[in-house]
Length: 64
Length: 493
Figure 1 (cartoon, rainbow over the protein chains, first blue to last red):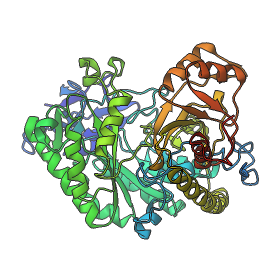
Figure 2 (cartoon, chains in turn blue, brown):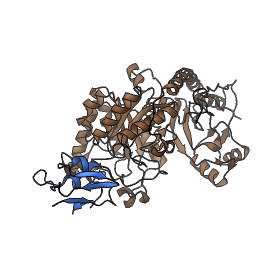
Figure 3 (cartoon, chains in turn red, blue):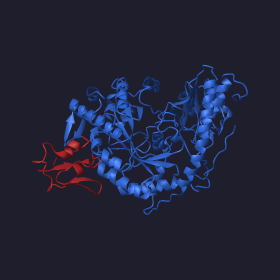
Figure 4 (tube, rainbow over the protein chains, first blue to last red):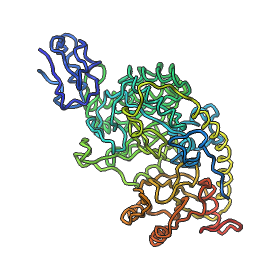
């Protein structure tokens, strides 16, 4: 139950980082990474996953 | 009349050492057609005070002052069909393109480095990639830190408007007195062809709903800024067949809501950019379509015609980009701001501008009284300072002015490839330059060789360096008078 970011497609805009309600996304090394332990897929908080909704690149924030 | 060149050699001993005040600048446009050109009699002195050092809000200021953009706010809440956020290339010059994104701390270092080296610096803008109001924490942190170091730098943001109403109070609190909003439509139906989605209130909206929300937020944000006396520039991307005719309506709406300036820009669209429009073959407007629309908008909200559609990390005067000189790897880790160059430059400019304004009024008056009914298109090679001071072969752009019974006005610029590199003129390049100067009657420059001059003449374009280092308007005024048969003025060489 977590999302992941396809690093090769990521533009590193960082929108997912501050939209994530769980603080699960951090910039590590060269790219943004979802911490699977913290990711809730926004269940109970929002109807849609915030990272996937704001991500400008299709199919880049996806179910792990 | 050969105008004196004010030297800034005493100010700088590095990059600017071989340049004069006149040559240290670039870009240019004059008179009344271009945003706020000089202090017109009908302009509120308080407004003039705000714009007189802002190269994007005042065409007169853009002869003298430089801007820099820092790309600190890369996150965006709107997807536009002309934008591909993955794109990154140092050779591309257009909005949204940037080579390195900066943290607020890195941005502060970069601003200090530029302020120490570029005495013309007056404005710091955050203008993409991304949206300065949506990625607000980074915008705010950058501004707060920069102002602590350089209190007199003007702060400026560009936004799509969606998150703008949430931050108007804070913008005002930080003395941001210039905001640019990109408004491409006031009819959500048109918006559906430009914006595939927005992210708002924690969800993604698409279609007409997305466009309606964006439109309402843009209008609200504009009204809120106007109510607080923050000057606004509206950027509109002209997309043929999508919003070109509609921009007349946009101009009316934004004027009604207090917009200070309207800047219609041509869509930049190329399949290689990977944008939706690029990939689907949507074309941009040509120069004639652009000018036709701008002319139809005359009389509405004031138009800006001196925009160069610069990069999101541009540094320098509008006609130049020195961004490559200030990449992070070239900036020392520890830096302190040294105000001396900027202060000395400002003192010189204040003096030169008074002189320039007087010369300009005189020249415009002369053109108006020449009463010839003639209209002349003049292309000027300039490095700035409002003077004819660039060699023909070194020009990367020509400023185009129209002299007519209405006076002298800036009508745009023509970008060209430098004809002369390393002392030799390239014939193939010259052909390109001549093509770019189509429709021009006269070229003014500081120096031109016989060979390019003859080839221009063959193409029906006269070129002269007889007015080298004169103020642009003074030179145009003299030529216009000579062409109109007014006696006692120098004839064109």
